Image (spheres, rainbow, N blue to C red):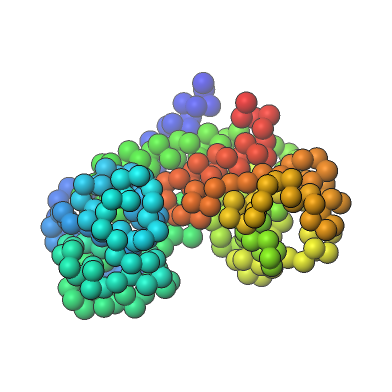
Length: 296
């Protein structure tokens, strides 16, 4: 109980340091460094990516979301919103037809789309975090530009508490298991430095086998995997192409410590690949896989 009180006090102090904007206009820098000014509280919001859609609904703004990408499937209510195209290629004509007063987008492939909307005078906030801590900051800023700063603070408080509950338990573990995360099986691809998965494995008390790779998503050979010999294997559900038992049947994989000890697990793609609140569920899930004795 004493440890829990200390953690709560720490979270409260961190949250208290966040300034709350009480009215509009609001001006913030988004995750790409762009200055975004929103003159009035938005009532018609479009989200162009599943992770930003999840953030908006988690902030209680679902009734204001008028358009989402084709891939936005969570929460269930998001499926009922007008579709504005794919994540990679949002349809700007559909976006304009919905008359948004704010668009929440993501970086990378949507850069040209964002620039076109800017020229038309439509404010666009870009969420583009690279780790769990940056996700929390992005949630707060989205709360600011939508007028949901209180809801954002409440959500962040809850997420920080859950993160701290995991990290406090695994922080004293001396023997951290070596983890191989299978992003894809042919070719065998993992997640290295700069990826959410690398951050989550470390926070969950593990050592990422690909943590010192030269790229964020390195390719592994069977020889390299056998040499590293992971204690635990976690695979994205989309990579499996079958059941867990099929991994043991792959040529050469029976030699691996994780296979011999039946330390093979899967995790839902959506909770680990989307930069939204459910990343904390991914953290909790991985921590339980790595240290089941701490999370009975």
